[in-house]
Image 1 (tube, helix red, strand yellow):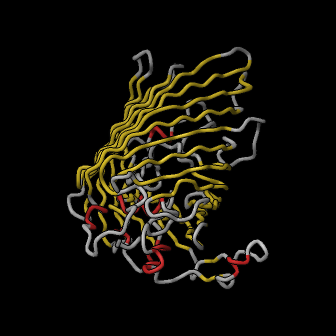
Image 2: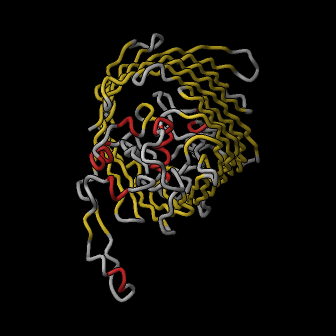
Image 3: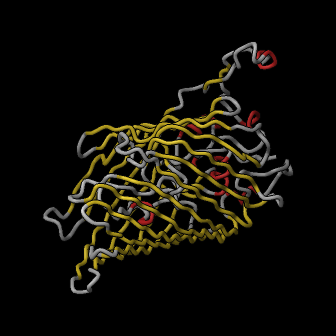
Length: 424
């Protein structure tokens, strides 16, 4: 049986103490380093925020039933009882930033706090789970709803398998190659999810109103496995729809070796090698596509028909993780005259856990456009340190080279950041 408890795991969220309280465990149960999930944390996520095996036995704060269990046998002549979390499913994250920009008029800026985020997340009963967060921007004192969705598991719980879940609300889509919320340790977002070939239009990391069908299953050899998703969104980053076309996307990936993507299919030995949940040897790869239509606020442009497609790879060699993605974009701009804007973005990152609480990071990025806009090459070295399981200090440098397509203009922009964040 699994004796590792689920910790600060959450779908598309910085690590949440909601689950630490529910299971009375540490953040590092599910995280290599907050917020980056380890293999066990990913299995917990793919199981709908539940421990893959022996969930009922390991919960310290059980759900509150909304009716006698016998009501289930009377359905449909009685209301299915359902359940709600046994404690308030909330958490708070506070982020403090010190920005260093040598070329700016103000070289050092204290952004204290950079932001305060309130989360609500959890599972209720055997089939429903939910997630949401509200963000308070420190520098502007503005508040906005970032995400809020529920998801329903449509098939009975089976160890190692979650073939179909329906997710609805303001969602973060699985079309994003690598999530900037549970894979990224740097303050700088991944360019493949963040770049916008046309201003104020789609980026793959956008959170949007939509419906997503997703599923995952551990491989028959009890290792690795497959994950997939397909969805429909408005394509407006949470704003009201501005056209009669809905965006759609799909993604599929496969992991060979390592821990099962939804945990084990069978009961394990009494004392399994739980270290594999933290360090493993595995190779994952996948592909994705996103197609949509928007109305950018550009003079002479009435419509942008866009397409994004790409591939990704994720390699874990014990304490070393190397992952990369490449995205190709095409935007057909219609209006006074049709024009096609081609774009591409690639990145590769490596991080290494020197100690359980020390992790250096290095990332290379390149973003290209075909319309004469400046192309961007970025180098991002960084290091993260856990002062406590729920307190992280992070420092990073950013070296940007912006080069025009003609090669005639070349400028550099270097900056740095020191961040402290804590969760409770």
